[in-house]
Image (cartoon, rainbow over all chains, first blue to last red; front, side):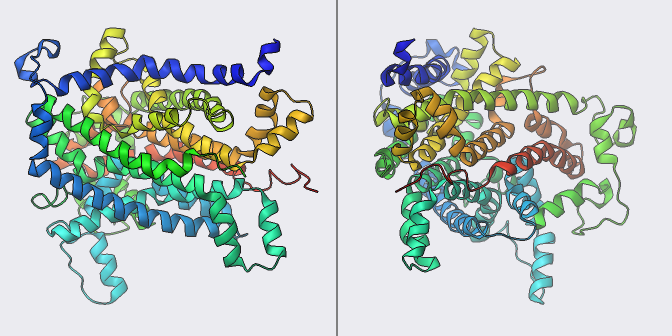
Length: 295
Length: 266
């Protein structure tokens, strides 16, 4: 058993289950998707393994596809807004919960509650809420004293805002929890040292804790952004693409192309292109993370 | 918090008041819940929906099994991998990133090939198949999150532990892992939530045996006269309960102070 002490072997042993699982299930669909993207297969033309290869025309076609490009930018915009707001709110909450609050356990349960809803259910709830005569307008009217009759789902801007609101409501707890547990895992010595050396509360947070938190922050942002990019349930249920195409996110667009128009091969190509795009962006974003930050 | 109230209030309204923007229904009713739970209570709603649809127990239990075991499997496989990546840089800079790309693929793109693969392996509409799928989907989360939490802890602690006589494995189990416990339970919760709410995977890869709550939700909310908000909300509330329970259970571990006294710096 001596070899167990050798770090290299131990590392290999650790990785083994992961590798097996990945290769078994992950590779196959990926490879098939790549294959499909070079064909012009649709389900009506027969079996997919008999589809004829037509070269990279799918990839060329998608570069000129206005709907595709628009949905990318739209989705990027939504993700940008959502993730930023969620991050800031989550960070705020995380620091708040570091203090000793009254009824902390209950507050924590309440704070993470929105995340526990099945997205489809959240979608329905907010769908009802955004109706012209729905609870949201009623509440706003009560709070602001005047009669608010915003037509959330008829106006492109408001629909966009509505989606952002829904996503922020549902996923801020994610940011909160990740950042909070990140804060908890920080070794206390540097923080105490900074306090003793005279740093104010805010300074300590900014110059000591935030930098140490960097790996966790980057991961949280990355994970949330990648998930938000695939946002489907909420948009499908609340706006179904919005008035016209105002909120047609990427997933919605792919869904329409794939399941309504049955252009599966095209969807495969687009999906892979998106993945490549996102991968490149994340690669640059995650670079500081991949260096080990242990001091 | 308002939406939570809206959801609960919708779930106790009877069909005539579903569209009212009121918080407290005039005549609250538990009909929606009862419809979901038992067959005998179906008669009330037969005008609205097919009474032949099953009760919620099958999807509920399936959700628990698929999501629960899938999550546990993810965490087991990913935890050690994350540690290896953090400490020994296994797979260099590429592997963690490659794992992340697993989640970047829009599900629509790969769902058909996965269906084919599953039926080929005999995993279609089985709990085992779903568990494996959810384990796979959860891996990127587990690995990335846990790796970043491991990265937060300086290597000196590992070294100190090993100087005290622990083997690398021992150091991993006994010293480091408890230190990231908040991160671990949070990761567990997330992956569980993600798997619990999965819709597309369950929709296309299950039929009668292994289908889960989100699919069931979609099935029951189509009524002859429109969306059945009451049932939908009731199911939504019920579906949230296990998550709340897990969330509550992990609270004990979201405690600071596990690092106190771990090192005595000179």
